[in-house]
Image 1 (spheres, rainbow, N blue to C red):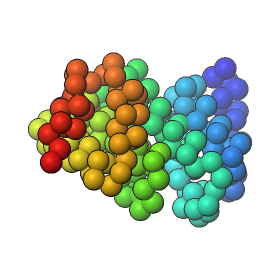
Image 2: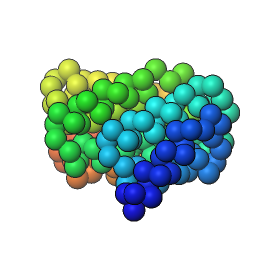
Image 3: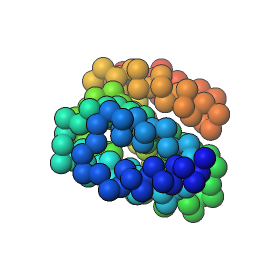
Image 4: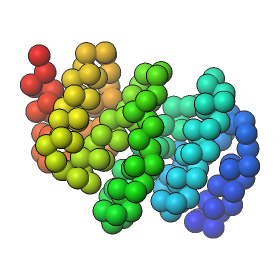
Length: 165
């Protein structure tokens, strides 16, 4: 399967236009590619989306990116995880706050915290949770709780929700 995924990746990297099939493929490939290959895939997707903001199926792309970040944090060393997550800090600057794009920012904050559990990174997660509640993205919080359930301390996100004023 990894060989086939690598072949699909090579073809996706050659395309300047993506549609639903390509964005959906980027979601499915999140489970089969190495971290370096995932960086290439999602950077290509980013370039395509920046050039064509109305690309069909962008939510698949961001769903796959969420899965890829979680998978790398879960299955690779801290060094690989940090390097990988750093590559995607740009998700924090996305102006369009659709639910999956918003969730990608939350995934980034949680991955960053898990890789380096400092007070500063915990505060960034808390701010993200509060902003999600303020702007109407509680669904992103629920999805993040499911995605990161096995990786976070019990009630980690719920405590931020309860402390929201």
